[in-house]
Length: 149
Image 1 (cartoon, rainbow, N blue to C red):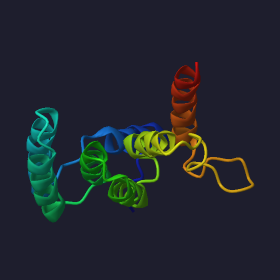
Image 2: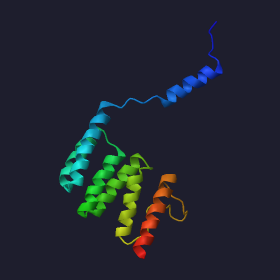
Image 3: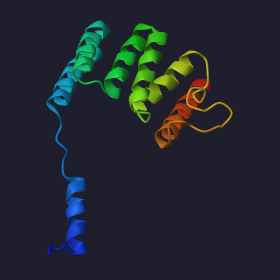
Image 4: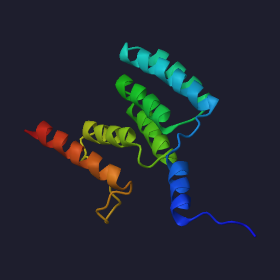
């Protein structure tokens, strides 16, 4: 006859599994390293150099933050339409990617629109991206009010 673990032991085992650190793949680590090099280039003002490294990172392991970083490079260079494409690609992978949501808000402000226009479902008045979008909306509304003063 098989012995069944008592409930407290099962609960402790379940918690242990939930909170154990997850192994990160070598590809994800490599992509993160390449992304970090791109970020260094970005902050030095070299958007073209940064995009080279961000694209290398995408080849290794695509992630929402890398797509957002490429979009940020396009945005700084003034290629707003290309920037929007990459911000939306980031959101396609993770609809709660807060940096992409914030950057889309900045694009909307730059184009003279409302910060809410890109985040709200037409006619519903709800953010399609959940609570993270609501937080982004509040911050963007604060920025918009400051801009209008």
